[in-house]
Each structure stands twice: as C-alpha cells, then as structure tokens.
Image (cartoon, rainbow, N blue to C red; front, side):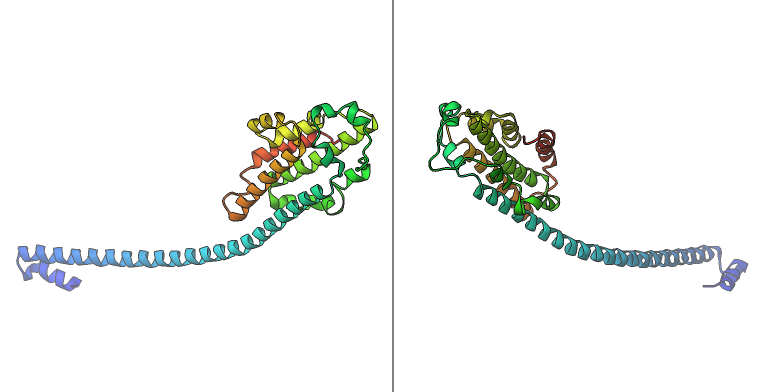
Length: 255
C-alpha cells in the first residue's frame, strides 16, 4: 500500500468504514515490519556479541589451563622439596637425640649433664649446621609455590630439631641439661603448631616428646599437602594460621 492509494481513499474512493479499516491494516503492517526489523537487528547484534564473548572466554580458558598447569607443577615440586627437606633433617639429627628422647624428666639436669655416653658422640656445631646447610640452605625458594602454611610446618620442624640440639649441646657443656620442652623457643614452636588439646596431650607425655612432636608436624604437613594436591583447598586459605607461626619465628632468634 502506497501514498497514492491512501490519497485515493481519502478523496472519496471508498466509504468511511473502509477508510478506517484500510488505515488500520496499513499502520499495523508498518508497525509489525518496524518491530521485526528492530528485532532482527538486535538479534544479530546479540549473536555477534555472544560470538565475541565466546571467543574471549575460550582464549581465557586456554590461558588459564596453560598457566594453571605450569603453576600446579611448581606447587608439586615445592611440596616434594620441602618434604624431602624434612626427611633429611630427621636423617641428619644427632644420634644422641634418639637416646635422650627415651629419658624421663628426672634423668635430665646434672644427671644427664655429667653422664658419659659410650655409644653416642656429643652434639657439635657442625651437627646443628646440618639442619640449615646443603640442599636445606636454599629451601626458601620453595616458599612461594608451597604456600605459607606448608612452609611454616617445614620451618617449625627445622627450628625444633635445631633448637633441641642446641639446648642439649650447651647443657652437656655446662654439665646441667635443662628440660628442652620447657625452653622458651621450643615452647613457642609447640604452641604455634599444636592446638590447645594437643598441647595438653603433649604435656602429659613422660618420654618420647620429640618423636611425638615431629610425628605431629609430619602428619599436619602431609594432610595439608594432600589437600592442595587434590585441589580440595587453596594454598592461600590457611594464611592466618601460617602468619601466626611465622611471626613467632621472626621475633625470636634460634640462639
């Protein structure tokens, strides 16, 4: 329907009723066509936007997969390196610590200080340095990908063995060996890695306190490491707990 037809209708070509009906049809058709055109245009725009977003999402996903794959390998490498470090610390512990760990509280003090070990050599500075030398000297490089909590367990393990060794060494030299589990620095490690219930359980032990503590730290290390490996927990989730442990160590020297 064009403008000439409308003019013909208006000029009297048909009756008033037909004029109204024709105009109604004409406007409805125009409106429908206008709506359809707008709808088709918008649909095409949405389709283009979705295609762009889908393409961008694909790029992001591919980048994430590649990045996450590399990052996960670094995490696994770091966890393994810290665990091997703990194994080496335990392996290089002065042999006399195994003997001392089965002693009762009454066996310490001057009794242990003046006792001559026939089967074990006394602890030396070189023995203590083994806890920080060799492969253990560069272990901090694994802190980034291992996460703070895992690294804090390693640091606790290393610090505890080194400090116990130092307390026994100086006690033997002074002929009076103190109770290492009441030493301030050892105590700070105990309170950092143990829950209140675990501290109570530890304090009830009569012997093998060091073995109990080291085993506890190992279990916590492995539990959290396995959660990270399986993807059950992020390495960032335990920042608050690990920060509390590391702040303790930063404020207290080993000696």
